Length: 590
Image 1 (cartoon, one colour):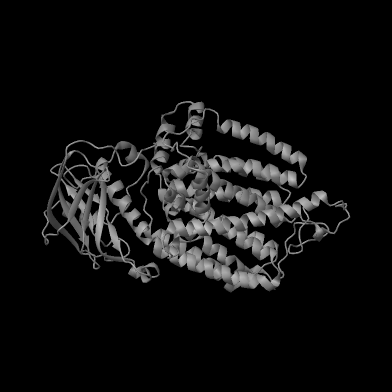
Image 2 (tube, one colour):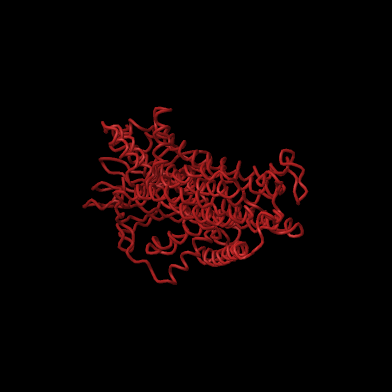
């Protein structure tokens, strides 16, 4: 039995019971219509925007999931199929991703990356549900959950939310771990948490952290036998995880100095602050991460002091009042969740700082900063008295709303560019590999996935015709900073809308046509950071890796799509000649 503090519901027979009326005056969550509307607003907007920009095109490691289906079909033995399911991918055993991939293919007859994204994104709803249960158990009003929804559901998450494999891995592992921590702290169902720990481990490498976290939580609660069973499970699962494990190639050997690691850890923890228009995004993340980390460690110290007092207090726990014990479920839940979140940050800083500090605040990692922020907020709501709870809720709502709004402006350009990169570089250039608008997909791709609908589907013949519009003046640079690229710039063309209406760069030779996205120029100034309509200005730059092109001589053309959907093809009188096949733009691992 886990006693709890005075802010959590207690009864003599069911210490983990739930009440529907609490210190903030709520009369039950089912009747809090306005509160639920406030919670649902960021969720609905998140999924609406996801649907607007998402495309069913594989990105990077997504190809590994398609390759998994192919290799699985080639295996003729059960051991071979098990090997394909559990084989190492980078540092991870992505078994969960592969199971979802296999089921999706079996159910629908084709692999849909949109389905993978959807399932991964839905795990954010599961995480929000966990925080909802934690708040409800302490009797809080529904509207106090709204800041958590704004923290979790915003465009800071753009890279994971539009990437099938990453959504399944990076979002879901956090859900599995925090769910397991919840079962270990708010309930006596420590055995039910074991399969969640196993699933977390085979979802992402950092899921391994649940094992030491869980054992510590059980020992703190003096559950020696469950802790021993978990320790045995840890030996088995971790041993199997590293059976045949090979250190991935490509990780930087330079770990950086202690100062670099500390800065990287702080920046990782505070990456959510990149959206605030206060100069350098990294500096904002570093400062915010420092404050959030110190606050979090302060909470851990506070909880630790309360737990330590239990060991040193000679009072017989059997006769002590339930509400006097420092063993509050909320304390232990926060302690376990913090161990996982900041532990992940430390591991990522240790293994990735050699790639450069900016890597540590990239979108795929922001999940941990946003969840840590939500966790600290929820603990404050639970722990602080009525006098401070409502102001904290209002401050959290203002912060969450501001963060969400700024994210939809700050990361709009990257979201749009990635949509175009997937549809052009990844799909068009792989599908149309001749001098005619005839698809020529490889047999494996045709077998396992469908081609995504794209903005160019109804205009393919035009892409292979002669340009009949005014000539545009572009600047072409080669081998920028020693990188084998072509950089094409044009100063006048605007973005027509916030989806597909903008310029595109074409490289055309007698053998084939290539289509590439552009990076539209951005406005400067405060309003460009606050309003989506002010983000873009005239002109663009397109950076093309020479490794994406076959050897040949290419004429450079510019395709434009205006606000009315009219297409135009412009000559530039610029040509480039690629005489040697360059290395691919990035190292592949599939």
